[in-house]
Length: 187
Image 1 (cartoon, rainbow, N blue to C red):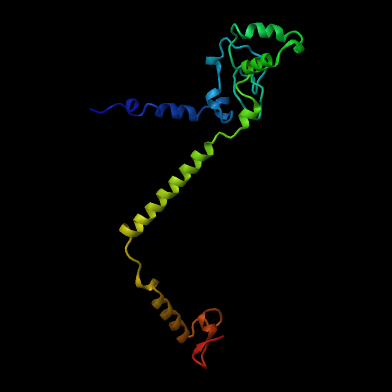
Image 2 (image 1 turned 135 degrees about the horizontal axis):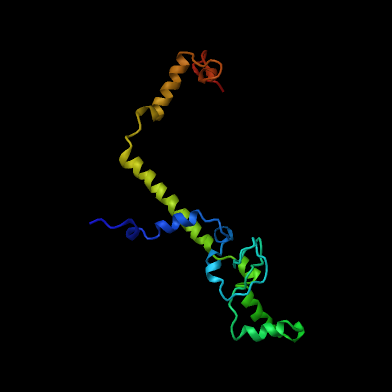
């Protein structure tokens, strides 16, 4: 019995739907897994307009201010939010860091830090190049016929001497470099 296409390729339908998506998750940058759209914004405070007016969270280099906070409010953040409304000099450095982490997933320095993903890309590129090389070698050894004898150096030299004898290419070809009086190549 034939299995349905959905059972054999469960992600095939998702890929085509995602390729047509125009939301910030597809355009936002390299941290798409931390894009929070309407389905995950419940319980998060709306703090601004955001990149395009949608109530979404995404870490983006081109627009660093998401419209909702990264984390939901809980027992740790509520007292800090009340202290935040007062004088910031009363907040400790640890309190400020906690408030920042509730609003943003990572700092700008963490966002711009290299992830090491370039190593995966280099490895994939090297793998594809090696596959292409092995395929070309396989074709040359097992598939293609041997080169005709006209590619051998003796045949090429004989062809040039034939052009010299027939005086073909007297202005631009090999006959231009042949000394017919001494029967040798000009120096």
